[in-house]
Length: 231
Image (cartoon, rainbow, N blue to C red):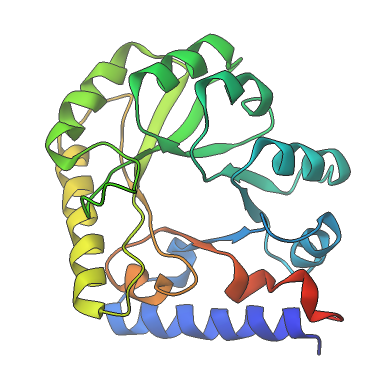
């Protein structure tokens, strides 16, 4: 068994355990392999091993992999901040955007998209200045503004937790996003069903799952690094 398969199996065990601890169904969790730091070849290996959701955070990385990987079974996620002027480069090559955080970006998506696209609104729950995202206090108004954008369907909320090993801090951030999601879902906005939660990465995905994540974005812990040699 190669290293890549071992990592995938280890992550699967961690996910199963987190689901058992929180009384959740494994089927409700989507694993996104974040392949921004590995080659197209490694990405193909990940797909061949059954991870069909792939995440990129740079237009050039996304487009290069999309050109070489033509499988219709793969769902492509754009998980990083995207400049408005770059929207036209990626909008036709992704199935889901995880970083909608401003009206100028929404306007560009509306202008460029040929069909409605699933989006997560990024929320800066932690309040860190280095993090992008709508503030929790502005979230409802932001979602209401999106009602006129028929090319955008807000399926949920996304956040990035602080890089810390303090589990209480992580739980607080993730549970806060879940509460916000529940509040927005209860508003019954047709354009923003807000049923999903994109949160949790390599170092904290198990806690995110326990707190309600439906999509976890896992990079190095899953795909490894190119310097490892044979997988």
